[in-house]
Image 1 (cartoon, helix red, strand yellow):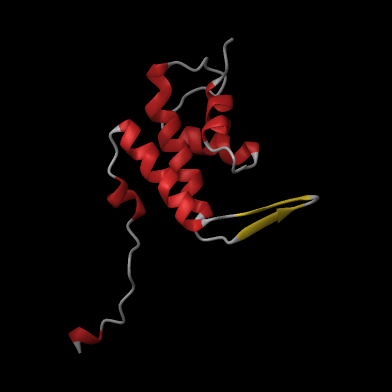
Image 2 (image 1 turned 135 degrees about the vertical axis):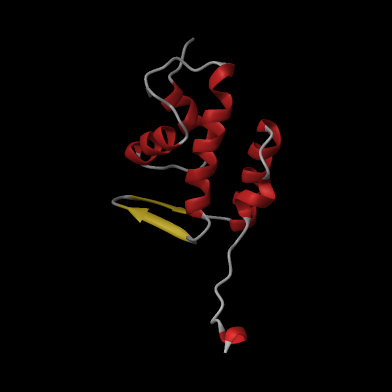
Length: 109
């Protein structure tokens, strides 16, 4: 059974859901030229990068509700999933999950 790279991405972010347009954009941002491409191991890292980008956006939410459906997010669970995707694909989880801090610049006054 063949699946498209878009379907592979949607499977990768399960049990979380994202709008199809969000998934398409994440794939394009990760370097995918066609979402209708048949998924293969050659696409695995691209799909992982796209999944990480989607899951990172969910870290700032505690829940999401659209129409008749809603979902809650377990922040620690999301971080573990992102770390697992990074480990499977040779990506640096610390760099991806790094939270930048904002300073007031008072040290320069």
